[in-house]
Picture 1: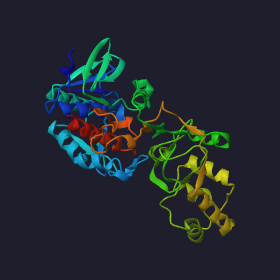
Picture 2: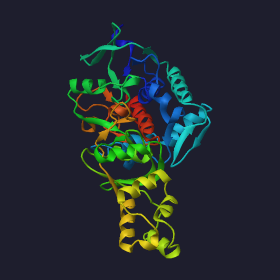
Picture 3: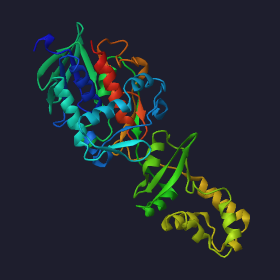
Picture 4: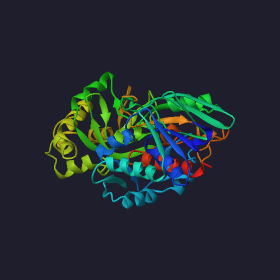
Length: 393
């Protein structure tokens, strides 16, 4: 094909890639969208329990992790949750807010994929799906992408292949390998929004598999108040997934199992109902299996009247600041996203273009910008994709 066949080639038909392709195509650019998967938007389809948590109303830059915490501000301010919600409503998709600003489709995640495909069709985006990229070369101001033995050229190349999280969906480190080839730095990728594993003495907590309760979890100055879930391997649930993005190996996380209790609540219970057992008071606030496991570890039992105030304060302190020492996480196989990625220092925050390689753009999860659980990563995909798609000359 001739060099003039395309104005841009987008590699990766996920959320960010389809958004970028649609935005560029609707501006009259000739766009080729490439993906080694036969089906576009595979990660979208499994998101939000199959209903796609497609954005969050409370999106703000401080809800994203990056070596440069200011990098995401520009793109997020220019393509907001309201902008994507307008698109959702224009396509007749019925939605609802679940909790904490999280927006979901009433129907299924397929509706979001269909929306993006329709937007790409409006932009007359050409697609090459189910075909691996054999090679990417650059010279004379053009990128040459060989796909299934066929070479395509364009002056702009958008890298939207994400990170290695959930490899069963075809995720790879392609974006990082390509970035390094072009001289871009990569912040060490790591699993994020991922369950913890427990070992050593804490293996006993695996017996609580299936037990869930609301907690406040803390790591250094970062804290989240959501549900925690014990699993056959360790700790999961929204609270644990959130803190996992910040956690560093060989450090402890602190869990407050009674975040709604007032200070001194056990002493107050002793004054009001001295003949109650400590177990009864604690099980009023926690699932029985969890209460029993925690109290067994604390080693305090009996009627409140028989327990000293010092002992009760000790129990309260333990329940408010229980230290877990994860021995790791379930890794990229179970991580919802990848933290780290292509370093933002080498990219324009306004256009997502590489500073030293004109025409090369990196967007979405491939970049060192990682959002909280709850629709933030999709909003980054829409915002960064729109930034690149609108900037392609």
